[in-house]
Image (cartoon, rainbow, N blue to C red; front, side, top):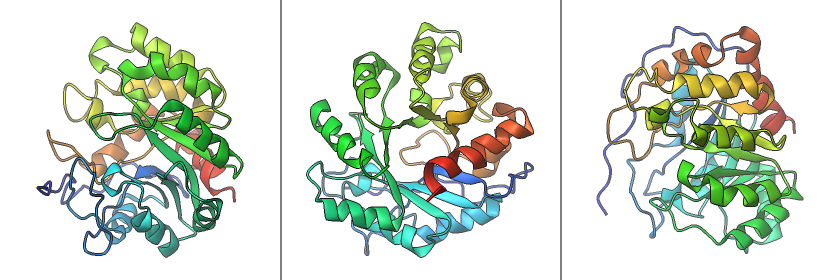
Length: 289
């Protein structure tokens, strides 16, 4: 399978915005290196290596303090690269794993000790072949016993089908990339209203990063800002932010992570909201133990 070219900016700018102490990049990845952590045979893309050292260097460059590293589909259910990164910086890193539904309890306990705090369920069919909902529900019930949550990734068109499933899960649910709204419809659209209705459930959380994936207009992503700002201002205690570095499957442009950081005060327009978005909320969900 052909290796994708790097999808991250080679020289991201130093942000003008200075994040508060303890700020968390709550959605990022590590890829490989492939000669040490092979990519999954069933993967639908092969990224360029983006190892932990580059991620940690970017964190320092951006003025951030901590990472939540999310297992990406190119590594399938082999979490070795993720666990290696978590163990390399246990004070500042937590993780989200992708696991076999039949994983043994001992393996989950080992992941918990390494800093994993949830499992990701990916329903984006262009990236993965999702498990049936009943199987995913049983896995969610198992990880809930560890105090973990579930991270879900889906397209906006799938919200109606998935909403009853998500509401029935026995744990907190973190939704990736704002549920991928069609920003061309505007923040007043019935589609986004349905997503906000789901967010009224107090167990639902949402990540408000990744404007580069949602924009129709391109950088600096002004067309996405109203969606993120609406979620931050209406659900301030259950919002998270992340870079999505190294931006897998980005074809249109190389996002500048410094620019992404500089967008934060536009979506969280007060110092108190920035503190919740970057520090208080991820601290409560990921770093409290």
